[in-house]
Amino acid sequence: MTRYVFDTDHLSLLQRGHKPLLARIEQHAAGELAITIVTVEEQLRGRLAQVRKAANPEQLAQSYKWLRETFDSLARLGVLDFDEAASRVYTDLLRQKIRIGTHDLRIAAIVIANDAVLVTRNMQDFANISEVRLENWAD
Image 1 (cartoon, helix red, strand yellow):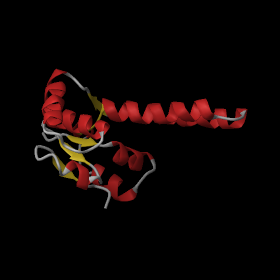
Image 2 (spheres, rainbow, N blue to C red):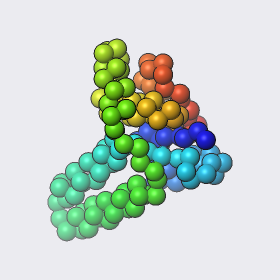
Image 3 (tube, helix red, strand yellow):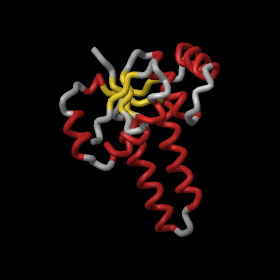
């Protein structure tokens, strides 16, 4: 079974009900779909920043509502960890001096360590890593 791992952008599209992505997801069993713990970090960090920046009780209530919705959506997907295998891949990618963002490099390391396919629209950056198999389900 091939596992497909959504990057943060694809997860955001899923959360917004992006129709082409939803159509592709319907073609796969739930156990084939996952995200990385890095994507969890990115999403929660963004929502927590909204909570901290809320300027009035209404904004605070809305921010907590979005935090809850994000938490619930994350809980529905399998989460792949940044474990020892991913750490070794990450160290190797760092040695190669691949020029992409730190979080993207960590996501790539997890995907490679799990022999999965990364589902992303960010083909340009991730294409710099020859070991990553890529698909774009958004277009």
